Image (cartoon, rainbow, N blue to C red; front, side, top):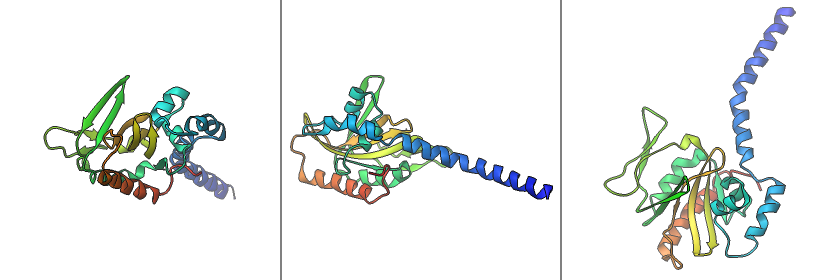
Length: 208
């Protein structure tokens, strides 16, 4: 009887250890979803157009960008798990034009040009972009992302349509947007709409 009990305890402990990464991941994901109190704080900023993009609202309210985006209606911010990175990135390659923004240390980097294809490295955790010549290139870490949001808003300078990639703390890493224009071409808007529709069909990052 003693041996059986000891064995059961060891099995239970082993099972708990195996579950810990999943529990941690679930906790991290939940932390990127706005609470009722946070939603009440965010709502006034988005009560009428024009509205700030999530990264600007995040700076104003002192909340992570992903939390801001999670509080918006799905038509304005469509969030998915970083596990969908490959499908989202492939969809971005269908845009005729794109503006990639990187915010770092108070600076804003802008890269104009089409989104290049890429593939996971066979030797590391990087997703290597296959850039040819000038334009966007580099090595991404999808495994370090916490959420991906398609953003569709009307800002101070006109429509804001793009896809923002956030880290596991909910902070923006970079975003891919339609080039700034008060009247973007119907073709570009349709290309963005296809990306947002694709993401809307995926499991939500946060439940309403």
